[in-house]
Length: 267
Ligand SMILES: Cc1cc2nc3c(=O)[nH]c(=O)nc-3n(C[C@H](O)[C@H](O)[C@H](O)COP(=O)(O)OP(=O)(O)OC[C@H]3O[C@@H](n4cnc5c(N)ncnc54)[C@H](O)[C@@H]3O)c2cc1C
Image (cartoon, rainbow, N blue to C red):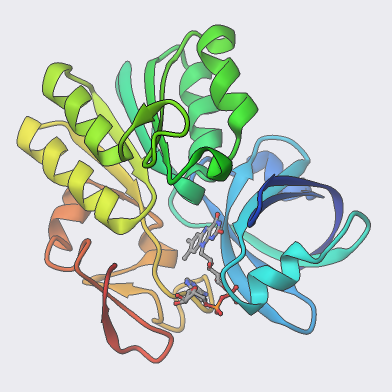
């Protein structure tokens, strides 16, 4: 797929190390929640990022600074140009009427368009959004205003208790799953969170869809860098459903592969 060169139209600082970068991109109109793009940062690298806004000509990515590529993206300003390939991958599928959505940290990025989608379909929506502390909360205005504006339940939690419920997203999700039944659970965040929510959902017999990450280079199923069991995350994911997750249960939350293809522990 060819690369589109696009212009950054706005930048929002979400936290000390997370920014949302908005750009004009026609293809965003047809992109679906959960899909990702390969973002080319001229002279630096090309990296996979989830779309945090879809359905209009203004798309966005919400990016945490972790290394060279993401740091360079954080340096970019309105008017700067980046390259975009995509949208790629399998999106979230809306199934059922009552849904639980669980996200941790920057895992909220692909979850934001999903919340918009399930709300537009009239679902009964419960969201658990977990962060380390209050100063790491992203999309804070949206999360705080949506119970009133959209009529959805939002459990905002922080590990240090500096805002909302004290505890991890997994702890809060487990409590909710103990007391309530849902048609589908959606999750994105650290793989230990995904594994915990997967185990709980399977125990309760609830369908689950999880957005996963693996080291990714080409984004289109050619290079094999993002192998996960029998799947390639770029081609078969990044959103995996219950049956697919069961097929990678040995790897899920346990190990991944680094940029050289070596097995490493999931932390
Ligand atoms: C489908 C998908 C969607 C993603 N969506 C988001 C998002 O919405 N927001 C966000 O902040 N991050 C997202 N990531 C992770 C993001 O791609 C990496 O943080 C980024 O590539 C790191 O690049 P770097 O040059 O800054 O760091 P590096 O210095 O290259 O590495 C820092 C860390 O990031 C990991 N990493 C590096 N390159 C990749 C790569 N190409 N793919 C996966 N992991 C990598 C490394 O293993 C290392 O642990 C996503 C990853 C995937 C696969």
